Length: 333
Ligand SMILES: NC(=O)c1ccc[n+]([C@@H]2O[C@H](COP(=O)([O-])OP(=O)(O)OC[C@H]3O[C@@H](n4cnc5c(N)ncnc54)[C@H](O)[C@@H]3O)[C@@H](O)[C@H]2O)c1
Image (tube, rainbow, N blue to C red):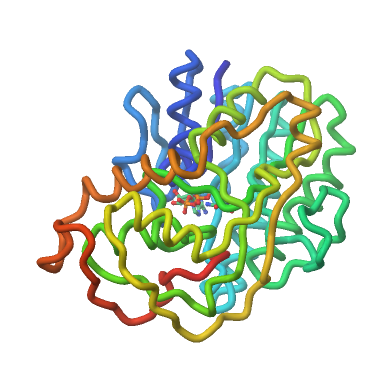
């Protein structure tokens, strides 16, 4: 199968491109490198440095004749989406509409779209099923919901096209950036590996649903040849608190620093996504345990890190605190 992976130089997209290549598919990555990087692009995968909003996108589809599109390109930072709402609308909404339209007009059979679990209305009815009311709290979530709605509305004109929308929980793993959605594991791993202390915004009781990127790549591979269509949560249904994640990462690094708390941020207190519909439709389950996923993530971060204080390489010492910043360890962005 010939597949276009947009955002394939980024965190999740690069794992998917790799899994597709390993499954024997012909893979083309399209990415601007605005947040992705060349070194993430797997060997043997063709790279096209371009914007999903490029005016020639339809010509590109005509010349390439793709069987499937896996659309992971997006701007992904909640705080940035408040500062740059027009750019978020432009890339995440107009860019997605343009890409989808070109793919549909050019006969692409299957379209997989990366959405998010942060578009559900806050409530106590956890874990959220796909039927839970939608009410995103920030421009990033709003842009994903708008893109979902455009795709759903336009799809009526292309009945032969198979469309799958995936509402991810907090995806974590090697290659994750410290800026972006669902970045708590990455922030804690990057800082603790350097011998620095992340700041936890709030009291650490906020919860999210964590899914390992290897499981997500496997799901995207399974979905290529599956007849399944529709909108699905991608999560475990299990809430993990900020403190629980922090302690798990610290344990994997081999340190025991006491957490440092900063002021709370405005964000949903609790999110967990019901995995039932996706499991019933596909049989897929995320099989990587949190401990194992964090172990692999920490190994990746620590291998790329030079400790910045003397204690960092000798476990069980306290850590230097670094000031709170937009990448510090809250949840959800
Ligand atoms: N990481 C998570 O926990 C999470 C959770 C929910 C949803 N998602 C979604 O998954 C997708 C991938 O997220 P990620 O965490 O890998 O982020 P990422 O920033 O690592 O990847 C996004 C990629 O898109 C590229 N990109 C941005 N604008 C582009 C444009 N106009 N044209 C072409 N390429 C462009 C970036 O350069 C980057 O390589 C996004 O759509 C995101 O909204 C991620």
